[in-house]
Each structure stands twice: as C-alpha cells, then as structure tokens.
Image 1: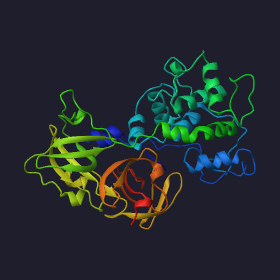
Image 2 (image 1 turned 45 degrees about the vertical axis):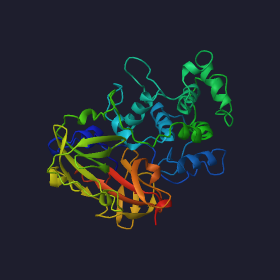
Image 3 (image 1 turned 135 degrees about the horizontal axis):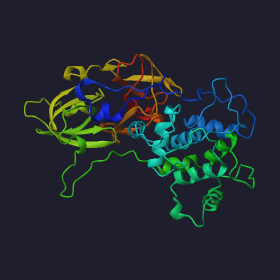
Image 4 (image 1 turned 90 degrees about the vertical axis):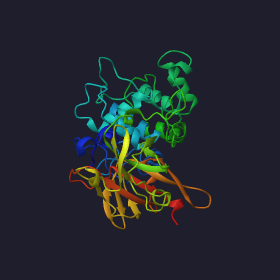
Length: 389
C-alpha cells in the first residue's frame, strides 16, 4: 500500500509533532512485468521501455489492454512520470485542491496538479478536470508537446492543428495510424507508442536536479516560511558556520541562524558516509536544536527503516524496495536526496532526487515520519550505484 502525506506538514510545518495522513493511494495499474497481451506486438518495445522508466505499467492480471481507451487522469499521470519530477515537487502538488471533481481519483491529484502548474494540461472548465473522461489523440498530443517544452504561444495556427502539426514534426504520430478525427479516444497502446517517441526528450526538457537558494533583492538568503517559524524540519545539512547552517529541505536550500548553545555536527559527520537525515527545531526562525532522531526534539514519530546505516538495494519494482536489511515501500513523491561526489570519490554534497535513482546496486537509507502502520519511506537518501565503493 502506498501512502501520501502533506509535504508542507512533513517538511515545512511539523508543528507540535503532529502530521496529517492522507488516504492510501490506489493506482489502477500495478505490475512490473511486460504484460502478456503486448508481447510480440507493435506495442511491446514502447511499453517495455516506458515500464523500465516507471512511466507506465500493466494491470494486476498481467495485461495492458492496448485496444482499450485511456482516462484523462491516467494519461496525465503517464506524461508527468515521463517528466521525472522531483519527489519534493510531487509532495507539494498532491495536497492542492485544484479541481472539484477528483473524488475517487485521489491517487492522480499530485500528477494532475503538477501538470497544471507546469502548463502541460488544463481543466475542462467550471473548476473541473474530468479525470474519468477518455483522452483524445489531440489531447494526448498536446500534453506531450507541452511536456517537451512547447507552449501554445510558440506554435503556429489554432487548436488543434497547432499541436497536431508540432506533434507530427516531433514524430509523435509516426507509429500511430492517424485518423481524420483526432477528437476520438486514444487507445492505450497508441498512448504508449506516442509517449515512447518523446520520452527521452521530455525527461531532458524537464531535468532540474539542482536545489534552489532563493535570494532577496539585497542579496540575502530568503528563508521563506521558515523565516519566523517555530517548527521541526527534516533535511540535509550541506554546510555550517559558528552561527548558521545551510540546510537542504526538499528542493530548496535555506541558510538558518543557530542559537549559540546549539551543537552543530562537524562537516565530516553531516557530509560523511553516514548519510544522516537531520531534524532541525526552530523557534522564531532560529535553530534551537539539531538531531538525527526527530523524537529527541519532540516529534511524535520518527523511524529509520534501514537501521542507522546504508543498505544495498537488491531489487525494486514500482513501489517496493528489497534490501539486505529488509523490504519497504517507496513512491515517486518520496523525498529523495542523492549523494554527490567529486572526481576523487569524496562526498561533497546532496542534491534532490527521484524514484529512478533507486536502482539495483545503489545504497539507501530510508525514514518513516508517520506512524501509519506502513513500512513506507517518506524520505530516502541514495548513493547511486556508480558511486558505491
């Protein structure tokens, strides 16, 4: 079972040690094997490639149903997964109330909201998205073209010809038998064929692995909501001085002043191989406590799923990670931090990561911040397989 929790509450506003837990996500597609009904067909290569990228999957009965239509919510999720967004961004997106007709599609809200924020898709009017509606060839082409980086203002002509013509230019329709009416429902197999053509372009166009440090007009670091907050916050220490710490939380870097009595870990500890997740307790925007155990600073729940050490990943499917120290769940909206090394093999920093960084042979530390009875990681720290010594 997957879970969704509020990014704002977990990483930005851990007030009084309490967390809001949301209903379990239910994704209609759930298997990691190449479905039996596309093997040996024109769809196999595209479906296989997209499954390897965690962009799509088949159904629990080992089928893909290539001739069936696809719902707008499913199509939107596929395009967003192709964009490979940071887990931190999906955390932010999953709790927005963008549309009023998403009941029963809670699993898709983070994808729909993210896609809307990025200009990939829009609603159908009257505060509705119509998640159960069947996606048309024109709509699918438009989402893919937008995800590659084009916008309506960049295209010549009017809807839908402007997007259809650009899609043809990008060869999105190359493997699809075009019909005269692009408003008819696209089949699942054709959606896979169309997406596979531009999947790599979409990922490159949306690649943003660097965290952001927001600055004010006078050159000072803007700590946003943490400026005057009194909260507990989880993340990675990147640098420190006698009076401040540079803190990576989600996809943003904060420079937080510290109380003179706070003991700041040494650099060889917070940038050491331990890969510790730090909890910072703030009071009026000033760090009053630093700990690798959130409960020591008053959090109600804090559990490491990989006890106090990195462990090697032996296998991963869509939602589960198997390691030498046991199994647990992850999701694409888990907050991932990836260890960054220099050419000499020295750990120098951490950057935001995605689910695709969790692969066989990498090392991982995983943390559960909510007592919801699921062995599911809210935060995970990754050493990529290529950097494992």
